[in-house]
Length: 111
Length: 115
Image 1 (cartoon, rainbow over the protein chains, first blue to last red):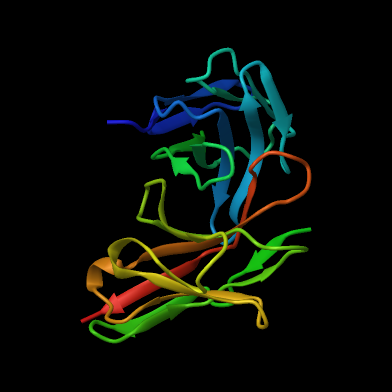
Image 2: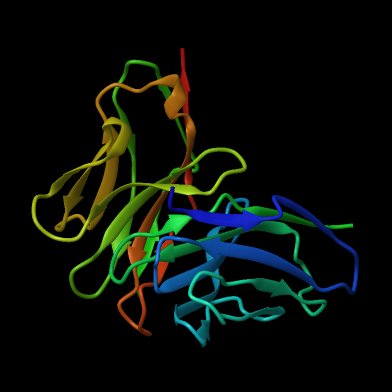
């Protein structure tokens, strides 16, 4: 079945540590996105990529980095510069001009 | 800038009764509108979308939404609620500036259906 796989489901980060969240899709979608979800704030866009080897900052890109070396993969790195990283992270993909397909999310907690 | 507002943090309804989850939008030009549902610790699932055409849009799981241009609203409805409909619902609008297919989401409405 086609879909988006996010891993791990749960992730714990120590202070000052970088962590990478995985997102893989087999839907053959060109565009991929990373959103952050916090209670009461909805979803906020971190980064997006419309095509391989290209990506753009979203609304809250500070402290995050991404790469898009393959069409299927769009990993997100949460760096030590992100001061409040505890959140639920959602990856999505879409064909042009249509709705998104979401992964199941990664819950990141700072310990 | 495109935006959506969900004025209710929570909606409570009895099973079997009709439900409405409200969404208003602000866009320049014709809006592309979406509804998604999220169950606990899961990603969002697509319910329905309005691009153009009939103002009443039918979607998954018996949900429908009515697009009202004069009131700039896109309320989600279901004739008879089920306990299993209890979840977090998000309205979204496609951004028309800055390129790409970016969606702006509302803050979400928690729907609770009780026996």
